[in-house]
Image (cartoon, rainbow, N blue to C red; front, side, top):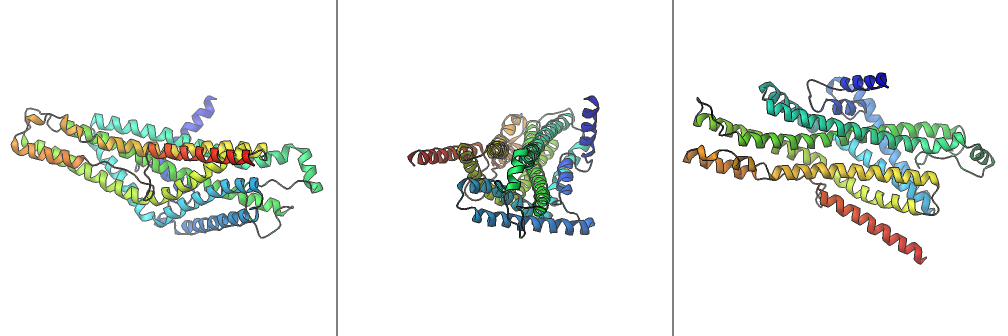
Length: 410
């Protein structure tokens, strides 16, 4: 056990990057799955772009299969939950690749700010940075494990049934059962018989691994950036508290320098938050729409009498993963919003009464400027906050209740 633990720790340390103190592991995961592209790897970028385009066409094949299964309610529900994953992964992948310069600019600015703060060697600032870095690592790694387990369930459940059940294999040979599909999709060859089934399994496993990698990298990176914003606002608030901390040789000029630093830091956070929101908001709009529908379909599928045990297992795992993923975004978006509303309290908690009349006017201006909440949106209609999460859960439950009543009436 100790050797395994040491190997895991050593592997995680290899993900760190001194040029990117906070975002190092996230960048490496994004690079591994081809959505972090650099000018030095043009051939690699082109190969991965072919994979991304293939993923898009694979999602289209899922819609074709969904149309073919429109008369089988249970299969259609199962297909819809899997197709929704494909749409979400494809949207995040395409949006990230198309907005590559903006993402790289955002990451570069964040890393530059952190490196600058580390060089100043302020004990409290460095401690706060270590705290939110550790938190971001724990959340990212736990999220990656969640995605990995979901992927194992997705791939393993149908194949496990095929391997361990001799009766099921005999029924397949007799034509009484069909080969179990990892993901419902259509292929331009006979994928219900060998060797077409083997080819389809290979394609589906590759698509599942690529999609889960994109999902894990994109979401963990976004959550880490939100954690950075919250932590930096706490640092900014402490800077405001210390504006009028005096030593023997300090005077009005030093106070003014500290206020300028607070203005600069706040401008930096606003600029990066606006850039981050412009990149994330369109993707989250698509995600929340599809996620709401997918959770409803999964719950309905679980309660269906026609659903098999494998489908119910998948529905439980998939629903829990979707809820956890949605909660992470809404929770951290809400944390940034709450923290941004309290930044100006740092000014009022400082020894502002030590300033003369001229400096007090600057204090009022700084406090007014800091009173600007940062709210991340998911398109034009919703925000990444806890009330949004609660509303989606209520809507899913209402849909489930309505569907249950319709089934009872029939």
